[in-house]
Length: 449
Image 1 (cartoon, rainbow, N blue to C red):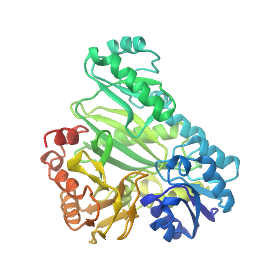
Image 2: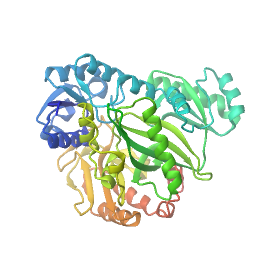
Image 3: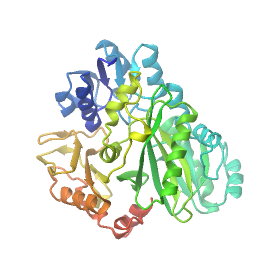
């Protein structure tokens, strides 16, 4: 293994996950921690830690100069960014390369290409991947309004530099267009430093389907099946499952083929996810975006394929060819992941930081819990509220759902509020049970509570 020591430039459960992968490969780990995370589980498990600044993310995990300095100071030969924070920062990837540090992810230019949704859309069109009716960049309300006349309402306004569900607004009536355009551009400017917008046709009855791919520098591109991420609240994923239920075999194959063709088209390297919107009424699918990092929901893919994506990321980053071919990938059974957060669902998902007085995660066959929490852990106010990911595996979807609900029933968290019970109830919804869900189901469900 070319990589001997890795700086883990992240926190929480993904930091723990990367530590475990490095241990399997015999790689030393250095965890970059803020002052709030010095006593975290990741800090206890890593070989060593290096403090990168105060608790506020802007002064620690979002400061590429501090992360690079930490990697150089501790003589790391690689940096794994995890997800979130600077995982999709072309600047950080380029800085690593310029300083002789391996960035565990794609090339900086590839991150930049996918980070700009308009450029990504152009590439999809170039490589024959279906895209939603829409526009290039629109520079004014007047220009946007003219484009909408051609596309037809309803439409989604999207930030060109967006991601994570931010900078996205639905427009259903022409009289509200100007106000929504102005506020969305302002939101995009505040969130991404770029107020550029583009327009796409809105699909009212849609599912969110994504394909996990991994590629090496030797030209090998392999997909590991697809996931359904349709259960979302305000564009934020709550439940993910693999494989996506109810897809016709021919449609499933077309989606896989499109994802691989897209990644091959611009010689992508490392793990990535090509995301699509599926029109449930027509069975047509369209390119949404590509995430150039490991996904939060990667465990469901690992459960149905038996492939460790994070160790594979590290091997590919070290220059090794993929350890498997497409013919070696077999999809077996069904897996579901529920994201457990420190929020009070009955109070509009109000954050619930504080001391965990009791933490008893489910422990049962075919149940995996990825977490950084423990009894006595103080959930900080500064970061994302994710506490754990519960992943259930079954021979089929019905068994996976049953095992997940049993696991949630035996998940004990005291001292703070969590979404455990909310997730249990969500899985009981008849639309989910019958795989008739769409991307608006949760918001509609909550609206009726």
